Length: 266
Image 1 (cartoon, rainbow, N blue to C red):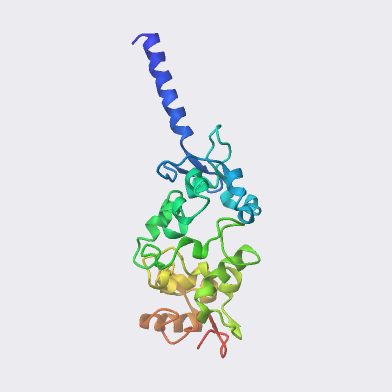
Image 2: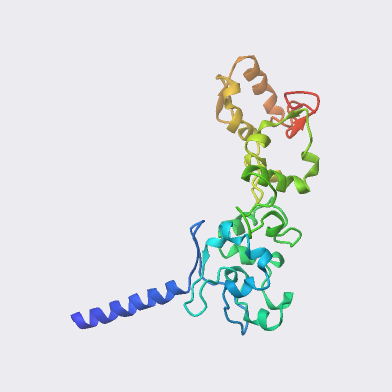
């Protein structure tokens, strides 16, 4: 192959890669890339400054949001981070607003899945929140326009726990004896809200879930789910776990908290 022909092929390849890279939408904070940003037939990108003319209440605090790091740049329109999720806005502007002229991620999780492909897989597992059926939406739990995209108030942990307890009010308490996992790590210490193979979206279906935190209380001796326990407590646990999990063997059934027993008995 001649040097001229080799150089020509290299030029074409580099040019193609550059053009492909120009079309990508990068979510810098989570290191994901969107290959196909949302499209609206006949609409063009107008830039986030145009969006701010009507949606200043949203744009004013958007700079501090993790999702503000979206970058879909076109030299002709400048910054288009809003349109990375809502689609090109020219038709919306020309219509003077209106729900039918712009993409609303609340209506479908597919907009979110463009970046969060792993969540699409989790929502396909046997036990999930009913996002795919439309009974729950991503924005019921996530506010993408401010902060770390978790609804609620206060610190990040308080945010996530408060978000869960908006719907799961029975688990909110207050309790005289609170399960420390909720206070120290939040609901996600035991649950994956996007879905798991286990009932109640638990991270594990048996004593292994509890032993993630409580291994040191078991001592050493009897083998339980791959761990060893011993002593009076360990032996008692070993004999009862054959009847069920830690929370279903008539021992620690008040897993979220108890008003009568520090060992979380109901």
